[in-house]
Amino acid sequence: MTDSSIGTPEQLRDPNYTPPLGQAIPLGIQHVLAMFVSNVTPAIIIAGVAGFGFGSPDVGTLIYMIQMSMFFAGIATLIQTIGIGPVGARLPIVQGTSFAFLPVMIPAMLGAGTAGLPGLMGGVIIGGIFHFCIGLFIKRIRFALPPLITGLIVLMIGLALIKVGIEYAAGGAGDFNRSKETWGGIGNWTQALVVIVVTLGIKFYARGFLSVAAVLIGLIAGYILALVMGDVSFGSLGNAAWFALPQPFAFGFEINWAIVIGMCLMAFISAIETVGDTSGITKGGADREATDEEVQGATFADGLGTAVAGIFGGLPNTSFSQNVGLIAMTGVMSRHVVTIGALFLIAAGLVPKVGAIVNTIPIQVLGGGVIVMFGMVAAAGINMLSDVNWNRRNMVIFAISLSIGLGLQQVPDAMAFLGGTMKILLTSGLLPAAIIAIVLNLILPEELGE
Image (cartoon, rainbow, N blue to C red; front, side):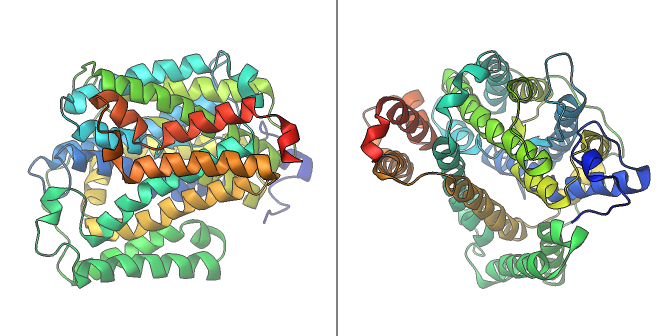
């Protein structure tokens, strides 16, 4: 709901309009609250896979990765809102660390012969450059990316990550966490469920800032319970600095072809998601379709933001769907409001204390929030699919793509005959589902749907 004191209806639909500062700053902070938890979660997951997660002696690595998630989300968002030549949509697009790459990054990091964080960062940088190059021809392939394709991909991303949410709520992913006596215990699940219940209650019974920050408030409630139960440790908080700059090649740089190929192919999936988000912003905020230049600029910014983040130890960036919904809800299309939010993210990313505070959140508490977030990703995909004409042709395309993609994800040993790189790529589920859906949508005649 909008306030007439912010501006006229015509002004609110204009990306170049700047609301009065008294309203612009709270609106910018609101965007940060909407994406904050989702933005830092991939870094926590990957740090855990790399052996630097919760309970690790080297928590400094985790804190640094959280710090880079905030800092480069802000930098990438500025590239989108302010623009550099043809780079950036100059729309209120909020960038953040992408969930979409996790189904490829997690098995790639765990697979035999991987290069750990140096190999991952090599993949992020090269994948970002490839993503940037996709912008050169994204205008020509928009016709091949209808809601049937974009909705399927977003749904698959959510489904691929739900397992991670359940593992976190039980006490953490990986053999190290599963070996703990508390894994799967009622204490862990009690804390996770408190997060879920409070999040739902705030989301549906509160308004304004409270509703937007429902996941954050749910995590605070779970955190308080964990504190009472003695599950919160402040050991790393005192050692974290108050100010630190990003370090170039903090984790090194290596080329691992399994990771590089996976990141490049997933860049295409991320570009599909960005096309949908850019269109969603212009449709929800200004009641118009996104122009080819806006879609191209958004794709360029995605790639550039990812490549720059990788140089400093950050993870891939993409447009954040939850902020698309926030723009539709507030009716404020101003890109300068999102620029203010980006500045807050950059400031937080320069303060390692913020990352250290996030690090004190018990994994099971985070798991409650992750279950909600990953479920919402899947729900967003279903919402996009609601625009599809569900005739026989589209139902067959969706059924085959989903069955093969989800099936390979659930039974990775079914591709035992393949080598490491191809096995990782295919058993992610996302890549085969996307390829099958795009190819079938292009070759099957429309008459089959009659």
